[in-house]
Length: 145
Image 1: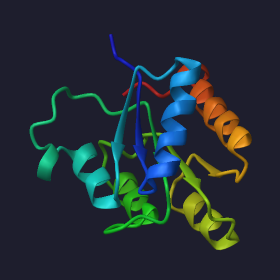
Image 2 (image 1 turned 60 degrees about the horizontal axis):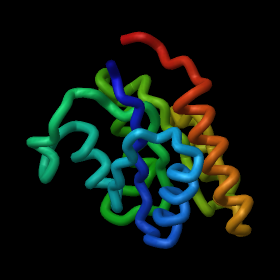
Image 3 (image 1 turned 180 degrees about the horizontal axis):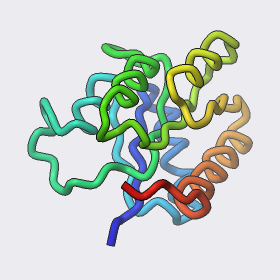
Image 4 (image 1 turned 120 degrees about the horizontal axis):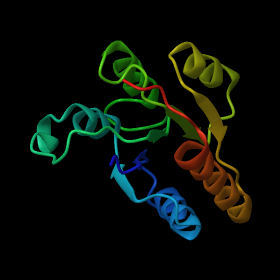
């Protein structure tokens, strides 16, 4: 049985904590792995670098990806995922503080499945993350490989 999991790619420790708390609160995510920069996310997904010995062969059910990341931006990560046959269909949600139209447009042009702006209000932020968790882990029907 495939355990549904999330890869959270977030460099802001406070946002990471809030996201993890919101997901735990709804008891949907069996596992949430965290990458704290774009290169670490790529290494995790392609089992390279520090993740060469990562157990299991499953990809996460969804990637929650910030745009403004160190080393590789979220958009660079997204472009790499879409360029590889192993990850081209992997659902990616851009979860960002950016409200720039160019970021939204570039995200969708690069193959994002969704673009969600992080609300500034804590309660609204938690509710948004909870809705994402419910949708991607319980409601969405991914394609069969």
